[in-house]
Image (cartoon, rainbow, N blue to C red):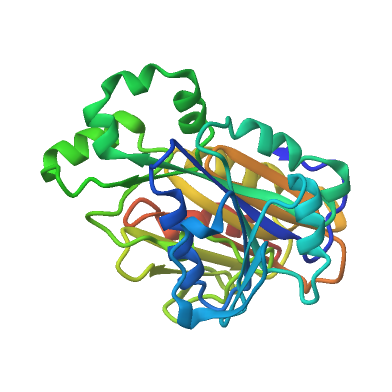
Length: 328
């Protein structure tokens, strides 16, 4: 678990990078995310928004470089370079809740990831996740694609893999293909032919943690709570925990380390017994884990949200591991 080098503000805009081979279905996926934004104001930076089939009834305004949607989302093309385009979007009032960046099909996403680490952007944005779109038909027809260094780089960067055009495969062949893309089931592979796109999982609304679900139980007399809720139509489930006082940083590191093989996302706001007087933001997506000090006032206590495949997390065990660190 690495600590960020500087205090982050309360509100930073998360960025989702969408990568994948030419014709894999990146623009179709981005269109789906824009159409199902769930109240988020999303700004999408694409290579050619003429390729995105936006429903004309959703379009509120259009210029040569920007399409504004009635649900508050924005779709635009690169204006000069990525950093300049991001600065223009962040200058909007209100600023977007999330930014999606489409990588060129012939580009290594490492270049975009490196650009997003620019110190000028650090206080305003953060890389949240990288989504790699893989065309099942292309991979079956062209098995040599797997040996291409660029294709390998796109897959290696992924926090999530979205498998498209797999409807022509039987369930067994599709499952084998998914396992070959992610032998350890991490990053998770989402087969759009057999399961709905888990939009809420792929998009991150910012550092504010979602409210605890209604079904929860009291783990200790100190008031720690835990509950589990599913993502509608998805194989993923959310487990939440909250505590009334600070926890041990060592205990949290041990917990996240033990759960890392099955976690898809983790987010938490913490106060640590070892670092009194400071609030910290934990974020984990795929293999990236950051722990950064937060600026601004937060209430006492800790909150943790974990997302994994349903049945993979033991909420009671999680509460038991963290609860002893909370003073009664």
